[in-house]
Picture 1 (tube, rainbow, N blue to C red):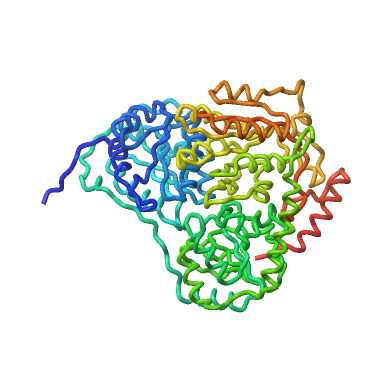
Picture 2: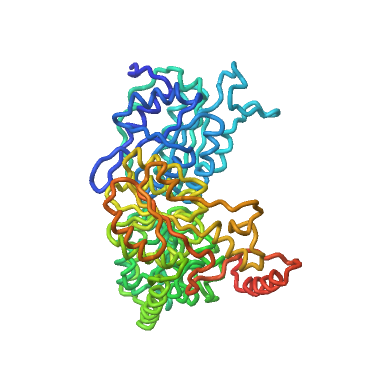
Length: 616
């Protein structure tokens, strides 16, 4: 029996295939691809560009200003969608493609799905070397797109049109796999994009992708249940996997039934609302005193959907109970077994349900719960002081956070990524609904913030998206403000200008270093720049305002909430003030030898702290 076929170019086959991939979100069937971000060049405009035009009514194409920016926006879209939906990004070969490599690493670290479709060299090699082609003297098959290999979960180079059939199928498996989820790169040779092939019509049948919910192994489950039953001081770490599994309700029920306090990673913050009595807030280097005080004494740590990054574990010096056992409830075995943990490889929601059933009536001692609630009460008082209104000439990051929280408390999704703000926000931001706290702190990519805010707004058009960003990150990548204006994707950007890289300056001081090359005033310079950030953002179409006090900031946030375009509010802040309460040691190696007495003193403190670090 002959197979029905349709003759298309390889690029047209890509476009049609993407439109036929579907998912279900809250009972509604939706296209799994939210769209394609594209910056066209000679390596993709004739092939992919023509193909995307043909499906523009079902698969929207968004034109961005910067390749890294658009990739960051696509990744933020996936994160804000709890990985249920994602986007594709296409560029020409050369610098356009390489601009996305940092974003690919960001997605890889954070386990977030995105499909990269960079153009590549001519497969037939007749016109070699073409514009923007890198030639390797010893390897004729190598192109710049090979840089994507170590930062992609799956990589393929398409040198014949029929190769796209298994490649796209494999790509979808990776993009939708809870355990293997991450960036996929299909490198599309530019001549092959335009080549025609008789594709099976069945290749374009509608496909529905439903997230897999893995059940735990019986033996692993029994071991985890026994460990928790024997625990006197258990703690739950809520990681990003709680949100991606949409397990917030299951987590709340489990914690309440068994009286186990919950602490949150950067990726897991908002798993429980801040107001939940068992939510102790952030853990680790940027943790609250309530959360870290419990973690230090915990005899069992149930880490749900966390890759246990050093900021979460205090560089593995936070857990001070010598008998502590870590249970890794995770869909990815690599993460589940970290640091000799007891692996419980399972979907977070299913795993919590099975654990709860096995634990029966187990509940922690009332003294442990009381310690948790008392600790949270003390922390809230300290946090309230840190975020209170001030008349200081230069307010702290914490005071700006307080102003934003007071002025815009409802339906807010907070976006941030790098600098000193992530630490302060992790401690102090009072998140509500799941996903309302959107922090890129796996890779902590400076410049993610504005583009990330755009991606979040595309995923959550009804949310009040607030981006908090420092002047350093803003200077690195701000161009997607223009894209937000073009797309009518209104967000509010609060820009804190502390005159340089204040966070790293504080770290430099803490390790005994001299103030050097971080704050603008401490750089090698002939003249210091006076940057009009409000004027710069206004030139891209944003509604802007420069404020000079916390009171003015609160007023501006309230008054500008009704603006229909992206708004940017700028405020000068103190680069040296940070919230002293909470937190934990972080392993940043201090030089053993230095001419500076301050460095030698910091080295002694560093060596003392190393004694508390767990090995293995």
